[in-house]
Image (cartoon, rainbow, N blue to C red; front, side, top):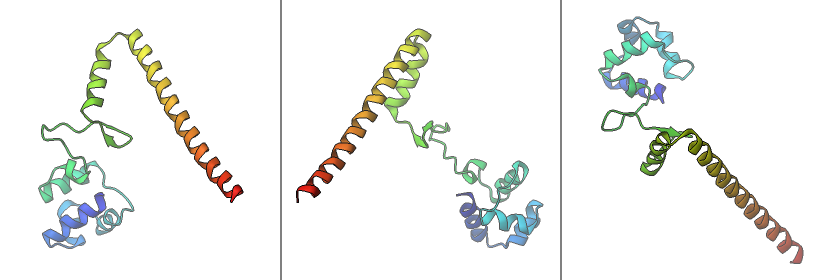
Length: 135
């Protein structure tokens, strides 16, 4: 979280919020708000912080680039694995008609999975209810 990263950097550098504020040209209240997660710095302040602490803006924003410098692709905030990335790459090379067909198939399989999970959850609940009644 940005607030924790900022505070950690400041404490490690051994400076006060007031001193940091003067160094980057903002108020001490701004630093306090950023460290308590009440607000976030703007673009220029973020650049000043990155330069002052000699870290990347990516680090401050918790954007962890991969070893090759490319940010991981995420879905629902979880990085895609190799098979998922391969699927996306392959999808881009097929025709629009084939993409539509593939999307229909994927959605159908997704619905089947959801229906199965609902049925399983419902039958588990029914089993518990029936077990309670017979006891």
